Length: 267
Image 1 (cartoon, rainbow, N blue to C red):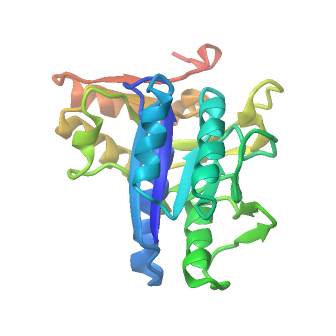
Image 2: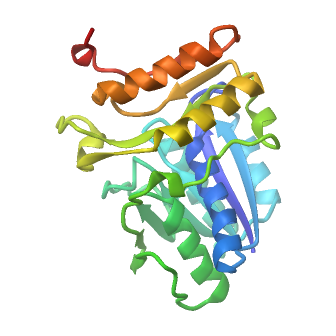
């Protein structure tokens, strides 16, 4: 089975950590559980790419399964792709996921076979195993398929998710922003923000964070953007990470970007 994990970013300098996380986790699960799900290709386009060129590139590669990462900035573009792909190749299985569709939001213009609700690392692998094996396979984590909806429980230990960057793929991010996630969730419940759907914050342990940051610093990447919803919601933890960066990257041509709550800063 040949699978495409497809990202449509808003700009070329952006990258999509979601498809890389799903890919990396799937490959690790294959080694752990022994269920091979076939070839997986990652491609990242942008909403500024000529639509016909993107559609042609996807169709001519004849994928059996295509997974789209859907966001507010690409939902219209991805909707066109799903419609046209199904017209030309109705047998192709289309999986969608991401913030714009993963929390119950309905987009009637999207054409798909499955929608992953919530976190995708476990759900994608479990679904792919069932598609390849054509039967329900028991895996050591919760997995549910309800019609087109696919979901697993929240991942409690973020350290169980493998680091998505390595020496083999880091060159694919040249001249692009590196996105990094050291926590999931947000302590606040702002009605206008999707992050409020999930209660509580889960943190990656600091030893893992320091190890990951060391890789970035040694690899010579130019910019790392933390995607943590409120980086300094735990001031002590934020201080330790900032101190590590200052100590280890002070002589390097690299910068780090954080989204913070100004009212949370202390002396």
